[in-house]
Amino acid sequence: MKAFTTLNGLVCPLDRANVDTDAIIPKQFLKSIKRAGFGPNLFDEWRYLDHGEPGMDNSTRPLNPDFVLNFPQYAGAEILLARENFGCGSSREHAPWALEDNGFRAVIAPSFADIFFSNCYKNGVLPVVLAAEVVDTLFAESTAQAGYRLQLDLAAQTVTTPSGKVFTFDITAHRKHCLLNGLDEIGLTLAHADTIKAFEDQRRLTQPWWFV
Image (cartoon, rainbow, N blue to C red; front, side):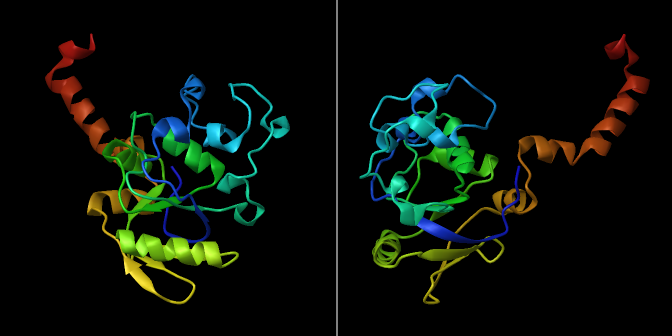
């Protein structure tokens, strides 16, 4: 998993509440578990004018000119700004996979669905909860200023605007450690590989019947 330390990223404002995971990555794309290749189908039903299916050449599909991800000023955005209850619906881990594969390293919203919130941390995407009035301010500024960027500092737990306003966010010590060091659950386990090996070696001596 890619570590997250600091990010100075272009902001894409998605002014919608209750965005569910089927909107983030529709169900027909859940057949693969490779964790990669989902980016072009992020928000597929909003992003394109036709119906998407796995294996389609997305470069030839008609884009929805009214959808914010298709606006040229947000090309390459790394921070998604959203409204409350982002990531509701089913628990599919493909949702943060699609966001990360599309280039988003962080999502800022007033609130998130619990399972999606947890899945983001497991896949190197930082979900930042800020007060609704702060998010309102960020929406107003990001839509009024071309090239609007935010500075995210995970160690300091801050979000800094171009004008220098600083907002703090909460994160548990465990999740912060994992993101800063690029550790998913497998990585956390492998960090204790020597201890695990020592335990197994000792068990071979004291309980050899388990290894027959």
